Amino acid sequence: MWANTSAQRHTPANSRLINGRAYPRAVLFLDRDGVIVKDVHFLTDPSSVQVLEGVKGALQQLQTQFSIVIVTNQSGIARGYLTEKKLLTIHTTLLNALGSCIVDAIYYCPHLPGAPLEAYDRNCECRKPKLGMLLRSAQEWHFDLTRSFMVGDVLRDAEAGLAAGVSSYLIGDHILQSQFPHAADLPALVPLIMAEQQLTTRRHHL
Ligand SMILES: [Zn+2]
Picture (cartoon, protein in one colour):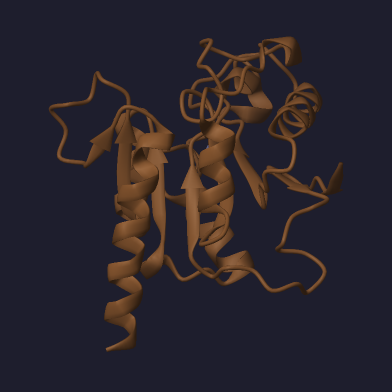
Protein backbone atom coordinates (compact mmCIF):
# COMPACT_ATOMS: atom_id res chain seq x y z
CA MET A 1 0.00 0.00 0.00
CA TRP A 2 2.81 2.42 0.89
CA ALA A 3 6.07 3.09 -0.91
CA ASN A 4 7.29 5.38 1.83
CA THR A 5 6.06 6.75 5.13
CA SER A 6 8.77 9.20 6.17
CA ALA A 7 8.11 11.97 8.66
CA GLN A 8 4.92 13.83 7.91
CA ARG A 9 4.62 12.32 4.43
CA HIS A 10 2.81 9.20 3.28
CA THR A 11 3.66 8.16 -0.27
CA PRO A 12 1.31 5.53 -1.76
CA ALA A 13 2.77 2.60 -3.67
CA ASN A 14 1.01 3.72 -6.86
CA SER A 15 2.32 7.29 -6.58
CA ARG A 16 3.62 8.60 -9.88
CA LEU A 17 6.30 10.59 -8.04
CA ILE A 18 8.46 7.61 -7.26
CA ASN A 19 10.61 5.25 -9.30
CA GLY A 20 11.54 7.94 -11.78
CA ARG A 21 8.20 7.79 -13.54
CA ALA A 22 6.83 10.71 -15.52
CA TYR A 23 4.27 12.77 -13.64
CA PRO A 24 2.47 16.08 -14.13
CA ARG A 25 4.58 19.01 -12.89
CA ALA A 26 1.37 20.90 -12.19
CA VAL A 27 0.00 19.84 -8.84
CA LEU A 28 -3.46 19.90 -7.35
CA PHE A 29 -3.24 20.34 -3.59
CA LEU A 30 -6.30 19.04 -1.79
CA ASP A 31 -7.39 19.41 1.79
CA ARG A 32 -8.59 16.07 3.16
CA ASP A 33 -11.45 16.58 5.61
CA GLY A 34 -14.47 18.19 3.99
CA VAL A 35 -12.97 17.92 0.49
CA ILE A 36 -12.18 14.24 -0.04
CA VAL A 37 -13.79 12.67 3.02
CA LYS A 38 -16.68 13.72 5.18
CA ASP A 39 -15.52 16.11 7.90
CA VAL A 40 -16.33 14.42 11.20
CA HIS A 41 -14.43 16.93 13.41
CA PHE A 42 -11.26 15.02 14.24
CA LEU A 43 -11.20 11.81 12.26
CA THR A 44 -9.59 9.34 14.66
CA ASP A 45 -11.09 6.02 13.59
CA PRO A 46 -10.55 4.34 10.19
CA SER A 47 -14.18 3.19 10.23
CA SER A 48 -15.25 6.86 10.03
CA VAL A 49 -13.58 7.38 6.65
CA GLN A 50 -16.34 8.25 4.21
CA VAL A 51 -15.36 9.42 0.73
CA LEU A 52 -17.67 12.24 -0.38
CA GLU A 53 -20.02 11.72 -3.29
CA GLY A 54 -18.52 12.29 -6.71
CA VAL A 55 -14.97 12.66 -5.43
CA LYS A 56 -13.68 9.50 -7.10
CA GLY A 57 -15.01 10.59 -10.49
CA ALA A 58 -13.54 14.06 -9.98
CA LEU A 59 -10.13 12.65 -9.09
CA GLN A 60 -10.15 10.37 -12.15
CA GLN A 61 -10.45 13.49 -14.31
CA LEU A 62 -8.13 15.74 -12.34
CA GLN A 63 -5.33 13.19 -12.10
CA THR A 64 -4.93 13.28 -15.88
CA GLN A 65 -3.74 16.90 -15.61
CA PHE A 66 -2.25 17.14 -12.15
CA SER A 67 -0.19 15.36 -9.60
CA ILE A 68 -2.57 14.85 -6.69
CA VAL A 69 -1.20 15.86 -3.28
CA ILE A 70 -3.23 15.93 -0.06
CA VAL A 71 -2.16 18.52 2.53
CA THR A 72 -3.89 18.11 5.87
CA ASN A 73 -3.66 19.72 9.30
CA GLN A 74 -3.82 16.94 11.87
CA SER A 75 -3.66 18.77 15.18
CA GLY A 76 -5.58 15.83 16.67
CA ILE A 77 -2.14 14.23 16.96
CA ALA A 78 -0.81 17.15 19.05
CA ARG A 79 -3.99 17.06 21.10
CA GLY A 80 -3.48 13.35 21.85
CA TYR A 81 -6.65 12.26 20.00
CA LEU A 82 -4.77 9.94 17.66
CA THR A 83 -1.20 8.80 17.02
CA GLU A 84 0.79 9.11 13.80
CA LYS A 85 0.53 5.35 13.54
CA LYS A 86 -3.26 5.58 13.67
CA LEU A 87 -3.19 8.32 11.05
CA LEU A 88 -1.37 5.93 8.73
CA THR A 89 -4.09 3.28 9.18
CA ILE A 90 -6.70 5.95 8.42
CA HIS A 91 -4.84 6.81 5.23
CA THR A 92 -4.62 3.13 4.32
CA THR A 93 -8.41 2.96 4.65
CA LEU A 94 -8.70 6.13 2.57
CA LEU A 95 -6.58 4.73 -0.26
CA ASN A 96 -8.60 1.54 -0.25
CA ALA A 97 -11.81 3.53 -0.42
CA LEU A 98 -10.47 5.58 -3.35
CA GLY A 99 -9.86 2.42 -5.35
CA SER A 100 -8.09 3.14 -8.62
CA CYS A 101 -7.85 6.90 -8.03
CA ILE A 102 -4.29 8.13 -7.73
CA VAL A 103 -3.04 10.03 -4.71
CA ASP A 104 0.60 10.88 -5.32
CA ALA A 105 1.45 11.97 -1.78
CA ILE A 106 -0.12 12.93 1.52
CA TYR A 107 1.54 15.57 3.70
CA TYR A 108 0.28 16.17 7.21
CA CYS A 109 1.02 18.61 10.01
CA PRO A 110 0.78 17.00 13.46
CA HIS A 111 1.63 20.21 15.35
CA LEU A 112 -0.23 22.75 17.41
CA PRO A 113 1.20 25.68 19.40
CA GLY A 114 0.49 25.08 23.09
CA ALA A 115 -0.42 21.43 22.50
CA PRO A 116 -0.67 19.06 25.45
CA LEU A 117 1.83 16.66 23.83
CA GLU A 118 5.20 18.36 24.13
CA ALA A 119 6.68 16.61 21.10
CA TYR A 120 4.11 18.36 18.88
CA ASP A 121 3.93 21.69 20.71
CA ARG A 122 5.45 23.79 18.00
CA ASN A 123 4.78 26.98 16.13
CA CYS A 124 5.65 25.16 12.93
CA GLU A 125 5.83 26.27 9.33
CA CYS A 126 3.55 23.50 8.04
CA ARG A 127 0.21 24.13 9.73
CA LYS A 128 -2.11 25.83 7.25
CA PRO A 129 -2.61 28.77 6.63
CA LYS A 130 1.19 28.59 6.45
CA LEU A 131 2.54 27.23 3.21
CA GLY A 132 5.11 24.75 4.53
CA MET A 133 3.52 21.55 3.27
CA LEU A 134 2.93 22.98 -0.20
CA LEU A 135 6.44 24.36 -0.41
CA ARG A 136 8.06 21.18 0.84
CA SER A 137 6.27 19.05 -1.73
CA ALA A 138 7.11 21.49 -4.51
CA GLN A 139 10.77 21.31 -3.54
CA GLU A 140 10.77 17.54 -3.19
CA TRP A 141 9.10 16.85 -6.54
CA HIS A 142 9.95 20.00 -8.55
CA PHE A 143 6.35 20.98 -9.11
CA ASP A 144 5.53 24.07 -11.15
CA LEU A 145 3.49 26.14 -8.70
CA THR A 146 2.62 28.70 -11.39
CA ARG A 147 0.37 26.07 -13.00
CA SER A 148 -0.96 24.57 -9.79
CA PHE A 149 -4.10 24.67 -7.68
CA MET A 150 -5.31 24.35 -4.10
CA VAL A 151 -8.81 23.28 -3.03
CA GLY A 152 -10.01 23.44 0.56
CA ASP A 153 -13.17 23.91 2.58
CA VAL A 154 -11.96 26.56 5.03
CA LEU A 155 -10.28 29.90 4.51
CA ARG A 156 -6.91 28.82 5.88
CA ASP A 157 -6.63 26.26 3.06
CA ALA A 158 -7.08 28.92 0.41
CA GLU A 159 -4.74 31.26 2.30
CA ALA A 160 -2.03 28.61 2.27
CA GLY A 161 -2.57 28.22 -1.46
CA LEU A 162 -2.42 31.97 -1.98
CA ALA A 163 0.82 32.17 0.02
CA ALA A 164 2.30 29.47 -2.20
CA GLY A 165 1.19 31.31 -5.32
CA VAL A 166 -1.22 28.71 -6.62
CA SER A 167 -4.80 29.27 -7.80
CA SER A 168 -6.95 28.64 -4.76
CA TYR A 169 -10.57 27.55 -4.59
CA LEU A 170 -12.99 26.87 -1.77
CA ILE A 171 -15.87 24.44 -1.60
CA GLY A 172 -18.92 24.37 0.64
CA ASP A 173 -21.78 26.82 1.06
CA HIS A 174 -20.58 28.69 4.12
CA ILE A 175 -17.80 30.61 2.40
CA LEU A 176 -19.75 32.73 -0.08
CA GLN A 177 -18.33 35.97 1.32
CA SER A 178 -14.74 35.05 0.64
CA GLN A 179 -12.47 36.52 -2.03
CA PHE A 180 -11.79 33.06 -3.41
CA PRO A 181 -13.71 31.38 -6.22
CA HIS A 182 -15.87 28.61 -4.88
CA ALA A 183 -18.28 25.83 -5.68
CA ALA A 184 -20.46 23.38 -3.79
CA ASP A 185 -18.02 20.48 -3.88
CA LEU A 186 -14.96 19.08 -5.64
CA PRO A 187 -16.92 17.56 -8.57
CA ALA A 188 -18.49 20.99 -9.23
CA LEU A 189 -15.01 22.55 -9.37
CA VAL A 190 -13.61 20.18 -11.98
CA PRO A 191 -14.76 22.17 -15.05
CA LEU A 192 -13.54 25.46 -13.50
CA ILE A 193 -10.11 24.06 -12.70
CA MET A 194 -9.78 22.37 -16.09
CA ALA A 195 -10.74 25.62 -17.87
CA GLU A 196 -8.26 27.70 -15.89
CA GLN A 197 -5.58 25.08 -16.41
CA GLN A 198 -6.11 25.27 -20.20
CA LEU A 199 -5.79 29.06 -20.14
CA THR A 200 -2.64 28.89 -18.05
CA THR A 201 -1.08 26.27 -20.30
CA ARG A 202 -1.90 28.40 -23.36
CA ARG A 203 -0.27 31.43 -21.72
CA HIS A 204 2.85 29.42 -21.04
CA HIS A 205 3.07 28.50 -24.71
CA LEU A 206 2.72 32.06 -26.04
ZN1 LIG B 1 3.31 21.51 11.47
